[in-house]
Image (cartoon, rainbow, N blue to C red; front, side):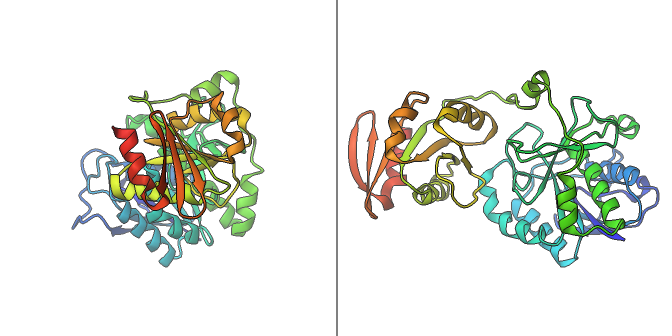
Length: 363
């Protein structure tokens, strides 16, 4: 029998067909605090119960308000994920995600460690932002079958999803209608968690399960549906500056991103023509010919204040034909770099670039 953890609001056992639930509260509540309305966590548990059998359920409450999901503390989510590791949970059903990619520093390591022994099933942000931990390559990212291409309870797979949400699930059950809830990415997650549970009950190993997911029925999106699935859900309220870093690695880019966030609370992302180690904030692009499309996607689906483009200096002119570069940074050895922008070109210490760059872009 597998152990499934729902990390969410509190679950009301009266709505889970009497299934015993182990409650663990990490949000400061002294009691379950169940409201007359069914909580978000309860509805997730109802969907899981509708689709699965033969499992133990752990409810890790990380939100104080049980009526709906609200903004929470990323540190509490990290604590919940660590607890799942300690409890030897087999499947994590997670609808509580973050589209603030800098939050990755709090949950990346524990999610990676947890994923070695469990399947973390995580929802895509409902406003279609790249999100953590959903977009991590070792997490099973899930979204709802809003196009209605599947039957209720059916799941399908697509490779190379730009959001990292490769699994689609249809959660259009009558029980949601009775709760006055529409199908959503959140409620698609327990459908997939139930499928994983069935595979575990059949004796499948974790490595086999992760491989079997990729052999699911392919989710084929028409051009009409593709426009819906990838369309921006929120308008861009301001222009996002683009900074080109002439460098053969993303090392300086990472340092700048961290410094801008720590000093000025500035969120930044990057498109890289250099294929290096994984970072959720950095999207590897295959070539210059897709740069314009990649910038458009990043502007609309990453919560970012600055977009860096990393590549060798010899591609700068070609990129300039597809994108308007606001600032160019050209490394000069290990300690200095040129900053080239509208009003001049300056040689500065690499250690001070984030301060000068922030000053240029905000003046």
